[in-house]
Image (tube, rainbow, N blue to C red):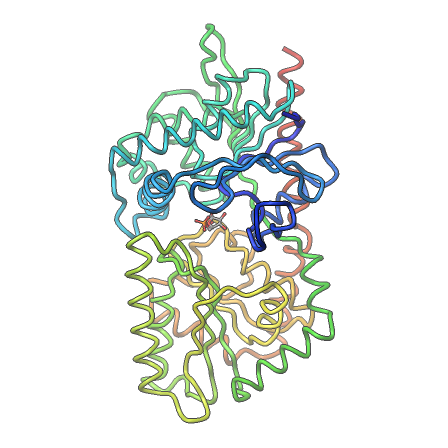
Length: 473
Ligand code: F6P
């Protein structure tokens, strides 16, 4: 097999299967933030991507796509049930998001997680060239760094954690907490979204292993009487801001934004929510606040419309099925009580949309609502800010989303405080154009400067530093 200097290892390949058969023509680049972020790092390099092709039991040879090698990892439907829906999204996801839903600790899921992580590590080990850099992505693959180091000590290994890392008091619930920390410490550089996440990780290392940590550096025993230096630091992820600006300036997209307003019956104000249908996003809290505003008359149908895009996600996991039922019941009730023949209170769409349509929606929206109860970063917040080249629009942003660290000029809210959220939405609806402009200009400076290219460069600079230090030893 061809070997590469840079290998990304992620749960999913960066492509979606759209055509007939399994040939390269049947695949299209996935639209997600992770793919866009890494696309920049991989472009023009001898790079491979190891991941699951998105369908159960699909057995495929590596193939070339857009100048990179994609290396599929086969997952059976049992693997998917136990490793993906089970341990990744039924145990780790709720635990790391502050137990908003109850994590389920099941030994058979853990066993599957270990087996599948080993399969990813073994595949990466066969694809990486001598001394290559392997970049492991996210919570589904926390054991891969250690497994890979054991198989290939010559490699430099990075890991980026896209979701929050919980406080030790929560993390300590995990029956396999030590194994997970050991797995992660197999990396040379560990990246987190917020300083708080990196701090929580370091505290877990100190509590469980008593390894000394100082200024993002952890000295881990190397098994030969010495120590190996690991960097665990924040690298807040971002978007390709320029690409969003270009879309926002396209006449057809601007025209589409005007058309959306018209199709909604030209309400004075449009509120927008864009989320995966996930219990971490605070969609229920948002609906509660908006519903109460309709009851108490702070918002009126025809004057204000809420557009809620909830893209389908993890339909095999019970907590997601329950959430969907609850949200659809609530939306149905609110619309039943308040809709008129001409206007709707909530336009709810359980669908995903292409990027062009998303940008048109952002441009049409006077107020963007991000009410996550816990979120690693939330790139929708950054996308909304990037496209508002008109310096208009108001971002209502949960302080529990990573984006709040950079976007302090948003209207920051605690989504558990429904009264506070209602007051912020009212303030957003009434905000003067001058104040919108002042806040938006300050946020746009941050997003345009800290774009995804900078994120990739920051992480790679840390990797180069560690590599140089290793070479010097
Ligand atoms: O936010 C974490 C994340 O893994 C993203 O990287 C991804 O886009 C999203 O969740 C969806 O996850 P899944 O692969 O489970 O659909």
